Image (cartoon, rainbow, N blue to C red):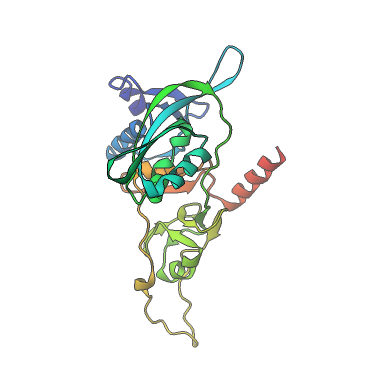
Length: 276
């Protein structure tokens, strides 16, 4: 608390609000980059904390209509990727205002899109354009709320147990998805260890060792057949997580986890959400 309020003395665009919980604070800034710089600075100073998914700030007009921040985005993409980029932005409630050809086989797209539609867009844009997209955006005004935006397409792989990951377990589970950890890393129950190949979350036992008996030799784990883990920066973690997840930030590690670590608690919360 003291460190956050001390930051207000030098950063005039930051806002810190206390909540009902004594150890939970609502921090508002100019965007993901602004907040990630503060998170990284505090991490290097030795603080340990959790960060939830970034959200935009909504307003209401005099008639009680919900308003959200809108931005103009300019995106330069290769001509062959134009269709894919337009599809991704329209799925995020973007409206195409203009389209013009540029030199060297590029096309400039101009979109009006909600600010919340830009959260998590960077990684998808890099994938769709093989890293060749150039994007800039600026705030325009608050306009009427455009409706819900679909979240991440794929679910995540969640560790069932606490312990050290094994090559044996990761190799067995590779057909289920991509992993964010390598063999030999410490994990705990509720920690996000990978991304599943299809929608829905999956709890996996990633610390299971090879059983040794008369029918199976110890042998050597085939580390060479395990795909390298996917590395996430802090900004990429902030884009990736959903509302029921958070980022665990410590001086030595940046991990993603479920807000509710217990599988039973998550199922109970899901059932109660459906009944409501």
